[in-house]
Image (cartoon, rainbow over all chains, first blue to last red; front, side, top):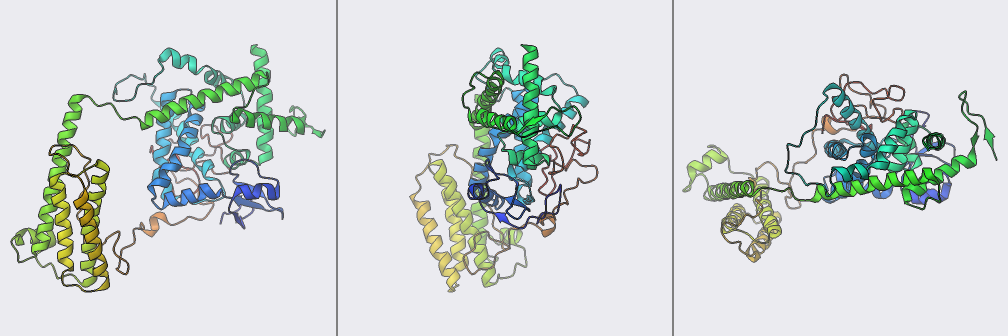
Length: 227
Length: 290
């Protein structure tokens, strides 16, 4: 069982399925919250049954479960990485790194109070940070030396145009406190629920909502200024 | 409605309704619902749409075959065929050596492969060994089924493996041996039903395994099998809270008490070092570069 951490009491029960828990307690919303308040005031770990079973099967080496797990995670991890770095190719590389790391450490994964998605996006965040540190230490000019790769249907100009909103959001998010920007990336780009975001960032769900509210308020101000 | 001052100096007052409205806005953005003329909603929607489009593109790229030049393709085909031929030859020879035994025609090879003083295996050991041969043959059959056929060499190799397994079970009348014998017959039928690939066709190379006498992944019920579990020290669950990063490594993904972004000093106690190795804990791990 999970040890007390960040005000979370030891998890006494693992609820099997969030969909059942949702209406019953009226607290948890979203797809798969990591922790939630129980009737007795304690915090409970909540495990999505489908994801939990899939992870368990993947850990046992079930190739089908691993493929399903990665098929579900990969686009979301890519979106998050792209939202962080703004470069589709780098985001693709980072997603691949996250996937490889996940497959490598999956057999040793143990659920400990955080949802699996939160765990994965924690890996992704660290990969992005590592990439940034690498690029700071070894600035490089990227060149095309590996033609054995699928060429994107869009050309450079289309890519630049196609990432207009992404680049704009990158600029805007740079002007927000890191926590606020990260909450927006996790909620919008990664598609995490409030509870998953809370579990990942070590915040309560309500704090996540308030942080997102402040972030959006700041974005409105910035948009007004730029307009 | 309820309003209160933010506890941090300078923070604007909070409205529960406004917080809830923004929560709904984010949910609507993720769901791809209409913007309602709100420029922020519109921007967030466009952002999410772009991310979705590029994610779909990346997903297609992942599943797309790698373009190989004709020259490289030819080289690969030859390498594939060579590997298949060597694997088939090794398999046939090994199986033949196993069948003929230490005093047979291939006695020197048998001694090399199985040892000079190779003792007669116990019943359980013999069944494990035979099961390994059958598994190897089944592996070949499965690959051939995916490839749409089997080359003559691979068919001979698989048949030799089945013969080897049958030879090991010849004097065994136990229930396990009988069950395995039935399975040999089944695989033999599957092998016989496979269509033949023309010689020179580059079919996927099945890995023709050389089963050991120590373990067989799918030994028949009742036989002793070795556990595929890794060593206990490697995968043993760690207690919660043991996710602290190893010294000098970047193993600390953001535990709930940490920010996922290690480059942010305020929120992240993660080590500044970018290198690290995967750690067995539920704390997300950046790994060591994959």
